[in-house]
Image (tube, rainbow over the protein chains, first blue to last red):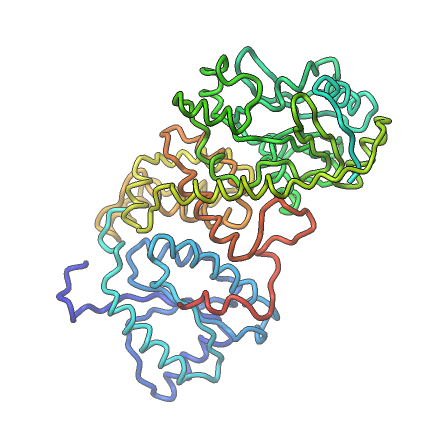
Length: 143
Length: 355
């Protein structure tokens, strides 16, 4: 790990997505044959509100180069207000990460079930972004 | 607010009166044991002796809210403590860990405190109370305040049901901030009058000093720095146990996932190539700082509790303050104000999600 030649670096990204929107958007991107980089591994949650920032912390500490979360647009939560609470938690958690220079490796989006194209584009930009940032400073560290 | 001017000597009668007249069933009050100061849970008023010599004592050993958390049932408890401890109690009320009706919170003005060890060792020089001039003088002699006190912007008592505010000399103002507090003072048959205790200028001075002290603290800024900072941590979780607002009955880090042993550890090592021991130093502290991010009152009990003398103030209050600023939330300020994570606004924080 961490030995790839620069330029050949393929980041590992772990994504947490809501079952009702982004997970379906990822599905739509697939069925409509949109191409996007295969660097992300998606974990399905039932709602944005299920996102415990500890999940993100754990993947980052275990050497993921990036992590993202994506859920229903604010106001469109399947469970009415899960994403409003999630937004506060994510903002707080990113504020903490920011102080240790890790916030740029955890991003959060709102992508609805019909936005397959947006999902594919987001994955492209995110992967490019993480590639540019290089391997995670926590990769290969003895933690 | 309603209040009354009193002398130091009157405070004994006041606190005894609360027990004698049944305003409260018991009280948690600082007590002196030789040069040292700690707390007592008192039911018999005869045990309260010249409280003025001890309630202002600049010594911090444990957060009083942490002592009361978890056992308030229906008896009413008075807590006489520093503002940070009262603010912690208010956060615990909001977290539904304590019952508002069974507490009478009495906040006492604080000028900053020394760790109980420093206080005991230097008692002859520090004495029963300090003010900012005395603190400066003592600092010259190498007797330093706790770091968390130097960055505390809320030292003046302005929370709880009743406040005991220091005036000039041996004068204090006892004032009620809530209906419960006023009722308590009325039961004591004190001649209450309208008090205007606006200490805005003083508060601003303390806040600006706190801010410059905070900025002068060494900043970590990177994971490498944090890793090094926490290198000595033995994950004893004493900072969690002594933290008033870290309240889960079953902590994640006491369960197999958070406290891996044996084969689990080996699996982790296999996944990573190597893992540091004691396990989960970073995971534990980063999780905990997120858990207390909205409610940390910055009392510094974590630092005092650390057996390895890690200056945790530079991590916990410093980090959580940024989160609290974002939500414009001062923990413990207002018992009616909802906790940031239990409420939301429809349109907010969008710029904090992927910048």
